[in-house]
Image 1 (spheres, rainbow, N blue to C red):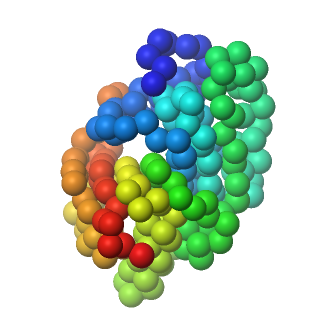
Image 2 (cartoon, rainbow, N blue to C red; image 1 turned 180 degrees about the vertical axis):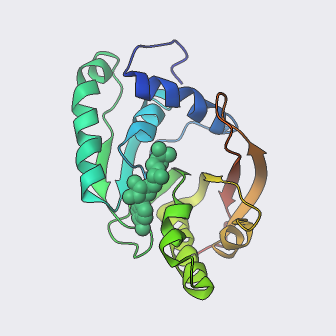
Length: 199
Ligand SMILES: C[S@@+](CC[C@H](N)C(=O)[O-])C[C@H]1O[C@@H](n2cnc3c(N)ncnc32)[C@H](O)[C@@H]1O
């Protein structure tokens, strides 16, 4: 990990500290990392800096945010290149359909993704559960046989994703409720390991 305080963009710098906290339990240096539901790419860029020299892929199903991520990347490219940090790639992919997801990912990260996945179906519990199950299964399939997943979601009494993660062959070894420094919104962090028997 790069431990010195490099100057990147203020947005990436502010998120880097939060993500450093999320991934501090990782006890190995992954080569292949995917950021599922990466939005405008800030989280992916922060992961690239923190997990250097891992190869990062940021995935989002929205072409507009993919464009925004690539714009952000072009701004940071000179600084990343100067520090020999591999440039992440941003792809359009969908965790629900499984379309264009990477494979053999050693470490998967996602933050504030699942609420966006089931939110549109919140009036229909069965449909929301189904879409959630598909998304988590597809993420699990993207991981290598000993892959890790760290998933951070907004906490709410009715949102416990443990059952879905375990059904998808992901053993939840740690589940923590916390707030990022300087914020008030309670978040839950799931640290998961793929079970060797998972498909
Ligand atoms: C709230 S944003 C979070 C962005 C980033 N992870 C962060 O924490 O700043 C959620 C993102 O999930 C993406 N998303 C929603 N459904 C998705 C799907 N089925 N597959 C991939 N990405 C999806 C949205 O387009 C959006 O960019």
